[in-house]
Image 1 (tube, helix red, strand yellow):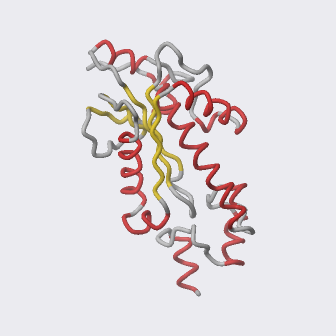
Image 2 (cartoon, one colour; image 1 turned 180 degrees about the vertical axis):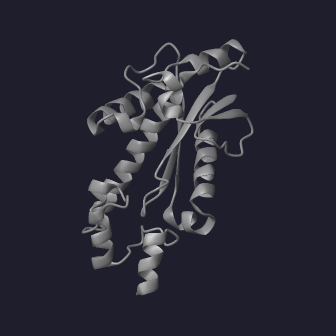
Length: 212
């Protein structure tokens, strides 16, 4: 099937979804994740089915939006769309690896839709095991509005988890770096050692544990 060449577009649009609707699909979902790379915390996936007649204005790749705008769009998406969210904790990440944990989160997010989906657009180059038709879109959060919406929901959900974690485990700076491998996080990890949220299978954390 011919697909729109959205790589050249400056912002996502609804062309993928419209093509699929023209083919007879009625519940087209976008899926994205947040938190594959951090040293600490869960990986979060979100799945969103947009209402074609009520798409929130300004949807974009979550990385291109500031925190205030993401929060605003998060509320609009949750109020107007069918959404599924899945959180896979750091212990499971260590047990099955981050790739499998991400695929699991995406699958569970799709399963969390109240009305289900008959086609799923997945950000990236891999499709998780699903019971519906699906395809992967590289840089999909900048190409598909449904995936962009999912990227916002996943990012805001995870950020809020890490802000809460900052209160439970003070000193690591989770509210600032959200568990990513910044210099401040590295310094705190060396000073305080890993906390329960740290991913023991990730190299910087594992290396510190081995030295200890």
